[in-house]
Length: 298
Length: 212
Image (cartoon, rainbow over all chains, first blue to last red; front, side, top):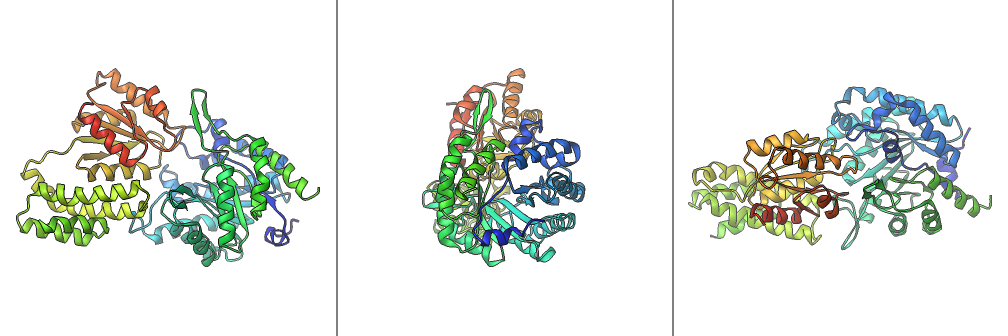
């Protein structure tokens, strides 16, 4: 039985999360325009294989294939009715591979809708969609909710409040995507790092941070600013850089050597959970594991 | 006319009710729909677009300004028809087949409308056939395609190819954009233009419509 991850973080441990899923699925036949979350039903063995690879690479936090599995988001693919099945199966699949060797984090991404008055969707509809998804996830047995790639602080807060309502005892890791603008780092919707840090803490996030965005170098800057803005533990999952489209296909420029070499800077910034986002692979996670083990004197 | 300036300001503040009320007042004061459009709504959106480009404001400010613009357009739409005001051009836009992301595409639509273009927005996951058919039925000069995913970008090429197969190359121009799309990619698939952001896309469409 694993000790609660928040306890380990409080004692100064750094935990390693897995790497990208979406870009791995693309290499394994995810059709353009198809729902990556539907893989849970159509190709479960592919997901299990990827999970095994990340586990073998040394990840201790494994994230489910449910990023786009809120009913609102699935509706864009005509799959809203399958939300319950996808979320439940995704957790079961992940648990079948990791057992009690790793934490299972339930991935939750944006609804794809913009909240009124900026967009056309009522906050209540977004909250209800998150609540439905979270209810199934928590019944299936997850160790945390992992909100990722949030671009709107208001929506991230709705998701955190939904989690608190559905399952107040489940820890919440909430990470946001920032862009570098002329005046610093901001979300697409214009919230600064400080506003995000305060806004997420206020509604009860246990761990906050950033994911996706760009490569690891910019993430070091973001992590430092987050550290200055909050006392909460930080989770940072960088992309392997920004995608480059070549004739051979899409590639992400940052190699495992490059990212692992930069990892100590991220750790020095005071990060408690590290992992990878788009373009990272089990090799990246293995390289991170070596850096972490070396630092911990293992 | 002072009221046209007030319309532009209300729009910049994202106040849709005020923009609507002022547009009605302007009509009552016998301003032509063309002037309300050009010196009120478009003038206001020009400022918003410029501020967004300079990163002085963010997406939510643009979305609110757009809402105000639509409120004003609703008021003058029937009058524009009566006055036989021609749009700057007609553009069909959409996110390409397989792509469900629309923030960027919506932003381009807002900026195009704010620059006086007539825009038919086909939404997300738009098949090449639909782009081409709609461009013809709407008599559009330009098709604008957006993709956020590298995996959906090839659908842009299929639309360009379909236009060629139907002998429409040059008659219906194409512009592409979206996070992973580059000028080189646009060139490599034979698109007529690449917009690196929403304001640039409007400039490019203007150029395409002029036949440059």
